[in-house]
Amino acid sequence: MKKKSRKPQYKRSRPKVQATVEEEPAAIKNAPHTFVIRRGERCSSIARLSRDFRRMMEPFTASNLRERSINKVKDFVHLSGFFHVSHMCIFSLSPQTLSLKIIRMPKGPTLTFKVHQYTLAKDVISNSRKQFVDEECFKAAPLVILNSFSGEGKHLKLMASTFQNMFPPINLSTIKLSSLKRCVLLSYNPVSKLIDLRHYSITAVPVNLNRGVKKLVTRNIPNLGRFEDIADFVEKGHLLSESEADDEEAQVVLAQNLKCGNLAENQSSLRLHEIGPRITMRLMKIEDDLMTGEVLYHDYIEKDPIEVEAMRKKRAQQRKLKEQRRLKQEENLKKKEQKEKDRAKTSNQGQRGELTDQDKLLLKDAEEAVGDISDEDDRDYYRKEIGDNPDEELFESAGGSNRKRPFIPKGSNYSLKPKKPRMDRRRQYEEDDRLARQDGKRRANDRKEMKGKGKFGRKGMRDDFRGKSKYNGGMKGKGGTKKAGGKKFSRRK
Image (cartoon, rainbow, N blue to C red; front, side, top):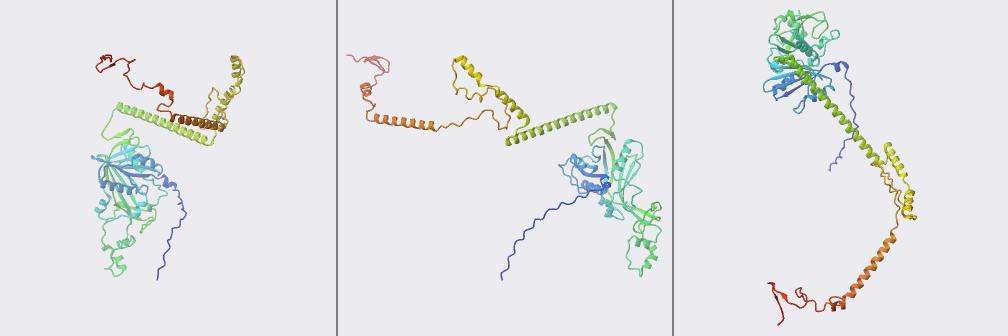
């Protein structure tokens, strides 16, 4: 049996529905956002370090940002306003060192740190005795803890404010304790001038509970195969091993209820689990502008006030020249746009036959100039000089051929010259044809007469040249001729 052939099913063109764009709330817009990129030489560990740093800065960062070698820092600066980016962190690797730049967008300051040591997040987690990573903790911003940044020096205050402003602020009256699941610790050593960056996840465990009950509450239930009843597990909970003992210094009284048995007005123990990365760095310099401004602080280079003033004047002059070039370029662009508009307007008017007000005024002046010229002046002059009236045809087209040539705008179809009347040249062409035919007949008759009259045609012409066709060497009369040598000889005997 022959199978029925299937008809091709064509896809129906469905109308495209644009997705509704929901506006972000003001709290998310005003929160500090960051870009984390890397520059310089390519290295897999530095790429991994930048990804770990992005994970630490979540959720207000571009986690899947893909930077390429062709992208410049200016490209990210131009995009920062659209994405509400307030800070940009740049890992730059050179043959000598690895540096970290933290830039306040869009006009600085720029803090440059030299990275002495770093450890990736995967190495930190693999070396920890008790590994704990909660993916839900990255949905909220971390808590920032600064240690020993209260020393003397403006650079310390600027560093502390920069680190604090990289993360959203915390309102103690409205904050929920359940959202504080991570913390970033920045510790400054005033002797070595090194800054240690650490990243932890925070967990809370209830205190003064039986170990069996604590494991049930925290949902960390071990193997119950050796117990006959759940009561045995609760009563013999002290026999279970626990890796970490409760530290009295880490015990706090909670103001809000938390999960896993952590109730308000009860004591709970806070535990930190390091999730990486680790970075040990040192501040090298602080610049006023976006990576190219005045150096406000340098770790090992100091300059005299005279040198600082000279550098400041030089930068001011460079900024002035840059501003002048920018204004000149804007002016040239405006002139070019105006010229293109005028050109397009003129071409459109030429196609439609329209004239502007200025062109109409010019044409009016030209018509008035043409109208002042009269034929009577030329006729009077002719009568005075010749003494006779001129012919009517002499000054017929005098009005059209004026001596003044007025300006006619380009693209207009207007002409000051009157149109010439169309002349009927048919009679003239017929007369020319008749004369040409008569001339052809006459030439044909002449050729017929010349045919039977000998070599030279007419008879008289033949008698005139009889006996004179022989060349005698160009000598007159019947004298002698010259030889090749030039001597004369005579025919006389």
